[in-house]
Length: 65
Image 1 (tube, rainbow, N blue to C red):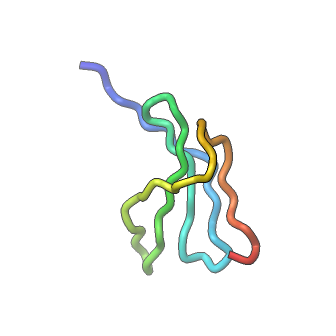
Image 2: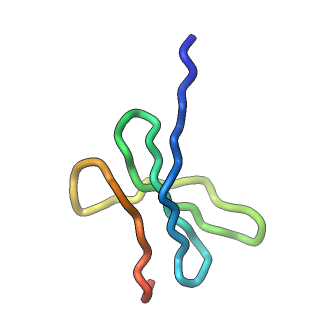
Image 3: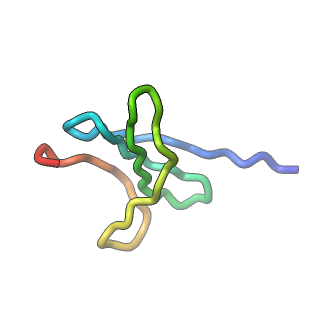
């Protein structure tokens, strides 16, 4: 049985420190995901819908949110 490797990299923290986004490559196609921070816990990941198609190479929060 082959083991599935999930690569996570390129994190970006939101300016108000309530969320972070990062890249996930678990099927050979990088995508952006976001998690919200609540105290010491983080929410489950949700895919970020982008206005472009293709693999994601970088995530970055804007200074104004």
